Image (tube, rainbow, N blue to C red):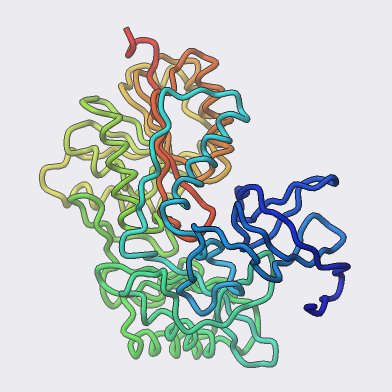
Length: 424
């Protein structure tokens, strides 16, 4: 029998009923659900029990036909991927069910919930490394699943090939910043100009260390190196393509996880908006939707981050064939647009963070905007906000899940709402 780890009480055989929203296999017991990481529905597995509602997978006695061999040597220790053992087609079906369950829990009916769009593409275009200094030496990698433990890595196979040099860059920069031994986050983004790196957690640096960091940026051939959003050196413009526009993204600014994911979400938004002439883009970021929609519509972009809007503005002015996108810096959580400000708008696009857009949804519920395209990275908060809009008379016409986080539980979606005047 496998040795028990501290806190474990027994090893038993159980049957896995379904897959939970966080990627765990769920076993139904008299005491309630038991969660087993890396187990799949339909499997009979041996697990080590502990006092809580989680159990450790010891062995798979009867494997699921959907089980495949993980391709990453760090799988099972690194917390970045939790479902590499699940084949892609059933993984997409599972992510659709996450969306279905979230809407059902909120009492929201959708006209259609489409199949999940596979948007992994060439892989992740941004990685965030963590650096720790347990013995005065830099240890760099990703966090373990449900833990603050660091898993040192040398390569990430779910990233775009252009990020192959990212681990080396992260190690080199972490080594230079070992003096204070403070936990460090190193965000590396793949751009047209090369690797764009933003360092966070260290605090201000003296001139000596600044010079060393600038020198390292040259040796590592980085496009740009920033510290807490402050540019230390920009050797090449870190531009990212958004439709026909090239956007010089701000340091550490938000970007969809994959280029294919951004393109898929944008196409769903473009299709929903259709021929609308006056479009409002809320939580606009640096313009992944606004810059595409501006090819045929007047777009007003609202975002709390001024640097992102400046990047959007420059890109719209520099791109032939686009209408100029007007911008507004505004905290939509504290100051959502009011119904009077929405009165002459044909379509609204929302792409809020994980917390959703409840305050703005409540104001939209007071309007008769013909179309609302809601992009979400959290099905639960989307369902909450959808209930507000549906309760006010909007119809949730279609929801499309989008999977740009292959091998992880995260799922994006685009929900299309039609107002009463659009359904006449």
